[in-house]
Image 1 (cartoon, rainbow, N blue to C red):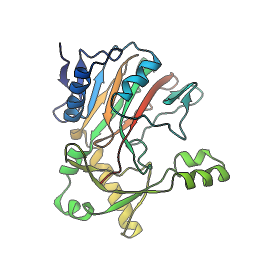
Image 2 (cartoon, rainbow, N blue to C red):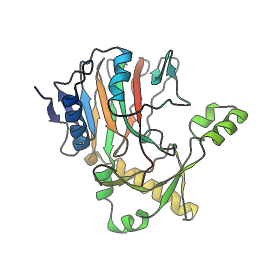
Image 3 (tube, one colour):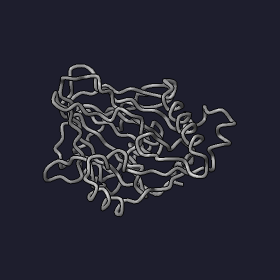
Image 4 (cartoon, rainbow, N blue to C red):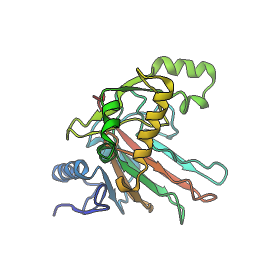
Length: 270
């Protein structure tokens, strides 16, 4: 039997039933790839698999990255552990795509719920293609051929000593990506700027750069292009970082929220 797909909204996201991440057949992966391209965000529940199986499942879609800054899981460098506790509230509560500061950013991420608070901690996703299509024509004309500079310094760089930060800046210099990127498989054009990693838009005055970044961020924040996912333990969410942005709600303190992801390496945006 094949997988079943139940859309979350008319624009974005779907819940998938009938998948078995512990035993991924070629036909199942082919179906998931097509469904992933169609819906951009997939929610797959009750996948009671090991860490090793999580990594192996991610590799069905491509090579996995090792994140140079985020907290890993001991013995499993492919896993990024995102954990918030009563002592340290943490969630990525700003709209972004993962690792856009890389020269070849992420194709997609596969995140697992490990410890989920009784309420709160949802993740919202925004369709960057739909957000672009809803921009006024005069804004599209302004941004279509621009490039933005993406830099880890103002986020992950804050945790480093000046010496360590300088070394990482040599290893990961600022990346220049289109403000509006083209999806390599679907051809769709979508917004590819975010507050977390974009330092500025190239070729315009600083005030204009700030204004355009704000306009594009607000386009992502429209509920008409979003879906929202409520987590359970062993719920997995797969999203296409080339086509969507996301943010996690930090509305669950003092409860613990612990999720783990693998991230699939992508290609240079164009």
